[in-house]
Structure formats: C-alpha cells, structure tokens
Figure 1 (cartoon, rainbow, N blue to C red):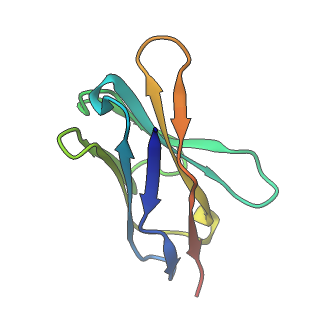
Figure 2 (tube, rainbow, N blue to C red; figure 1 turned 180 degrees about the horizontal axis):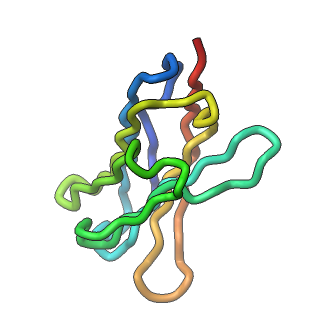
Length: 118
C-alpha cells in the first residue's frame, strides 16, 4: 500500500519558518520526482516546488523563490520543504506529490495545514 504522509504544518507568525516533511512508503522512492503543491481556500491547487529523482535539480513557483527550499533524502524516502520568511499569503493546505519518471502514475499525501498569521 502506497502512503505519503506529510507532517510539520502549523500556525506561524509572518516572517517565521516551518519545515514540512513527507515520508513515503510502498514505492521505490528514487524512481519518483517529488513535488509540493498547495491549495488556499477558494483557489486552485498550485505547484510550489519540484525536485527531480536525484534531488540535484529543482524548480519553484515565482511566489516562493528565494524563500522555500525543497530537498529529498532517498535513503529515508522523505521529501522536505523548508519555508522561510513566511507570509500570510502562504496560508494553505500543503500536499506532497510523487510522480513516477515514466507515464502518469502519481500519488498524493493527505495534506498538512500551514497558517501564517499574527
């Protein structure tokens, strides 16, 4: 059974930091590109950051460049999202995604809430 389990969300003040984690099981993790998406109330889900299978290439949404960093540890089958200088507009449910390197097979986590508020 494939599982992606996110953790690390919560309430943080503007300017603060959080680190999200997503632990995968049931898949050969290194065969999957990994991404973080987010969805704010009333908005569509959007791509935040993506890392390739090796973790040596990544891309980011313009809104988070320079503030967020995606990384992965294939030995631990875990992907991380370090979020710094958080803004109220970063408030959303954050989802982990793993996409197989061939075809359209992909898996999603259940999401973790991030709220940025004073």
